[in-house]
Image (tube, rainbow, N blue to C red):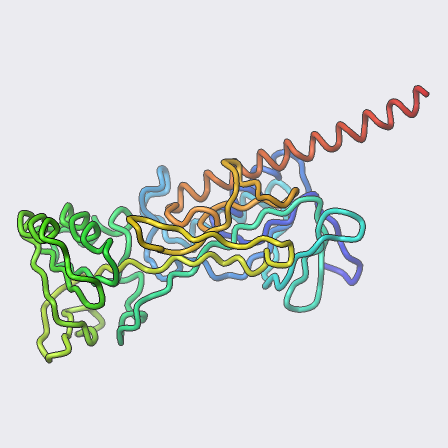
Length: 323
């Protein structure tokens, strides 16, 4: 980018599966597209992407590298950088400012900044995240099938979490930690599925030769396990949208707030005209393939919106010419 502000049909903020899929859709629609990527994909600690038809087991970095090549193959541009603000531009559309002080303008914005997994404050847990400390059985369950799985409870939905992971292993233990005591019905469900319950608070993890081997309790006991699952708080990365007047909405599940997201219609259009969102910033439960699909939907909707505006202008010009 030069000192002169460049203008694009669309600027995509975020270069993950959603952002790249949206950019690919728009590039194939012959739109000028810039993707600005901060390089912090949510799934970076994971070894592989799963349940992505046609790309099952591919490393996350490889999937994104392939996506970047495909986007640039259709004329899209990709730059690394942190977007610090987005605001209405004087000439219409939007002005996007990067951390290095450069800025670009766009007729439309697609924000795909994802979310942050906020982990419980347990020593050693963050260092194992995405390896043998896990959150999604559909992403990781097969890889830890039949192993000893610990479920770290931080809220009432941990009961559902334990019952869910039971599908992948007969050796599941629920550690109540900071969660409320299960009801009689929940205790019965856990017992019926042979899921042990440990009431003592978790103090840390035991690791041997860079492998999780157990959960250490406040009373000093160590309960062996090979994988630990935890429900994180899923917080949308939505700071870039505050300058446009967009805020987040709390995401609830089972009567518990589990995170936040930016509200949008099924195409990703927000309440601010010209601004779309896609992927985890708009839907916290989306896996990679769903985020990619949301990016495609948003890209198509943006292109349609641009066509509608261009048609209105063309009609005005046409009428002026005939008058």
